[in-house]
Length: 257
Image (cartoon, rainbow, N blue to C red):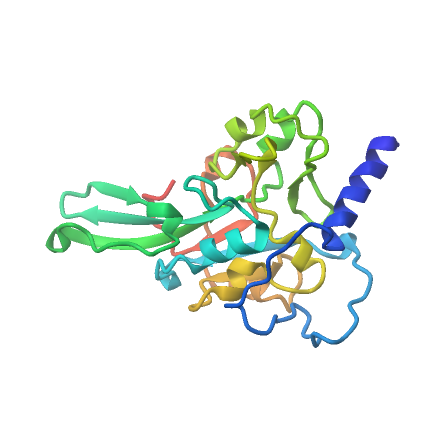
């Protein structure tokens, strides 16, 4: 019972925004998921009434990297290279059908032109992040229960419990976790849990200039994500692992892993 109470306190701390958050000047007015004004008082959050996911429309991503930059600012992710909660990869397929993947600085500053553009058959950008799996391997291997899945489908890390053993980092098939260099605990995307529980969008979705990212309720019929799932063919990364990711892609090329 004690562990459950501590876990609830951890989630409550995130919801109440007690963690230090840097607000983005590039965001402009925050858009509510439920259409409420900024001034309106948000109702008490009930996790049992939500089930979140994110859609990524590959054909709309332009590789600007604003999502990765906004994520670092919003969640105090270290600015040093190799520390990301979300990043963008560029896939370049040449005329010989060879696949070249790069992600300089996580894509934050965009991408330089390919060295030999005349040899490029096609290229595209793929944003990546924690897939918030329904069957998360990271939860299964955590020896102290620090990694857990909330009732609304989000996978979180209780940093008060985490011992920095790195088991979850090794178990994640999407490479979406890192060990925080100062806290020495596992860190990852939370769908900006402190924002979505207040009816706002994740920072990466908020700043996307082409609306390549779509966030919302997986099961809610009025949700933009639910509409996307109805209108488009949906793919997920590494479907053979049966992790049942809740990050859903459209127009996903078969070369992407």
